Figure (cartoon, rainbow, N blue to C red):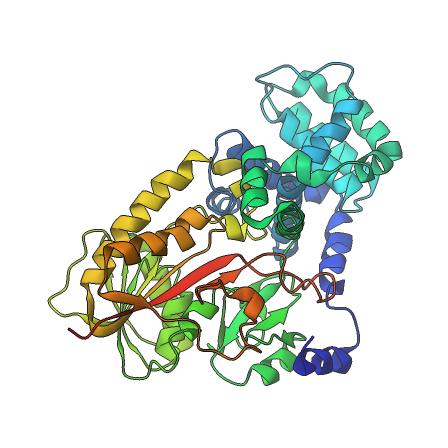
Length: 466
């Protein structure tokens, strides 16, 4: 652990994960007024698990029509994400209390049971609240109302003896899809694959990138300064309520996601094309570093949010709504950044719905798209300029293999190995070719509640002068 990290922790005393514990404790004490939060959680789970829709989208939609207090909104999210991270083992425990499998087409019954089981076994919710409200939810559901008595009986038995059964299960094997664990075992080895999976099932801390004085902001936000320069906090609640947010002093960005731009070094005065720019964390980094940026994304809505965030930060960038596959420009750029669409398997700890939405066949399709985007991006790099490619995938087809194929095809580009000091990017985080490769199992030496890192790959490629 770095000296800065150690000093920050000594100055504050209390464990950083206490805030999350307080959320579980306070939100779980809700009585009948906790029903709307639980309904939102169950609705979001149904949309992800049955309809195969992204969690962030459905959660935003589910809360948009309900006047939930900040605490209840946070509790709804906590219930849903806890289920997504532990679905396999929760299903297995519930099965032991059911004499026969549940019939199909029972509305939200299974999601109601899963949400209640998560509350009882993992979130320390008082049994009377979790059980009675689950029964209310069941009886309010057209397809599941006749199973109210069954839900009551199963959950009461679960609350009495389910914890021991849950502790005996291998949640990694039960929750992760076989194809993904098999892939990671082949790529990283069986032991490392389990470490990656375990870290991916942990709730992540809040990482922020500050415009200046990381140590000062770590102190103000009761956080720590990571060796990479990011500030890490164990915050629960509304991000907008944190000190410095309204003043534009920082933005939310995982520590791994902040590394690719750092590979460029000083970007002052450079012209940068940021392809697939939204949500804009790297755009903000480049702008704060003094670059002249054109941010491109095919989603007008996502670009609007990017601009709104830049305004809050007091930063600026030109924007263009366009598909990166076909984007053209009369001028070429000093730097072209391509943060390519990918399977995002390195971000499961932040987006556990990936476990249920991605398929093995998605990798080949996305790798083909990434190859097209790389070719287009390369056309826009001026002679002597730099192409920065990155993805938040752990799959080599979307990272190392992609760049190897590109360099075979384009002899006018060469790899620029990482130049940063080993205290910022350790040798362990570098591939044999000098590219960046982070894993969710990194930063395991930190205290519980603030461990881990998103999985990221990045390569810096320099175009020849002639």
